[in-house]
Image 1 (cartoon, one colour):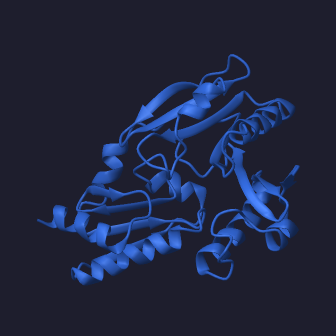
Image 2 (cartoon, rainbow, N blue to C red):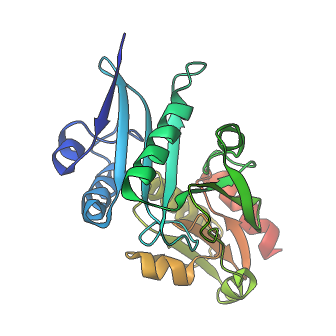
Length: 253
């Protein structure tokens, strides 16, 4: 069956829908992410969904570096925020990446950047990008690497250098930094709060409702979700309440 490539606009977001959590479109996380995406379209968000018949099989989400919801400096680049291919062995992931590269050419960009992490599925792994001509240009704590595909000789994107200072801001108690960029963040936040309540730990939730706030506050390149307890990063992705509780206990002592 032939694949259908759909460039989602605001109408498509409400009718076709996004890829993640698509089986639960009435949940708060899905609704929040769809509303977030609709608002980001005017900032250059590109969301390409691939379908095989009625089944969604992959997608890519990317934005101009100046507006990207990841913590990096990538002016003049496109930044891939999310990539997923549900079909294996058919080159779909590479085809999605190439679509972004060709869009960068059309827009006259310096290239394409992506933040990778080999230790978790919550950020793309580096292997597929290495196979498609990307090279590592920077690194950050917790296993994050910055890869780029260069289209000219412009300076490469780079990470901030103040990660320790960012973490030091949250040295007293439990802080959850969250956004609506990913639909699973709602569940992730609820799981932290459940674990904290069981341990009688008060949590402060900071909603990062702008890129500027995320760029200022986030202690990791992933940016859109972080959990910090007494100055130590607990997680930047969803865990079960039990796993969050175990991590909190290890820091609480």
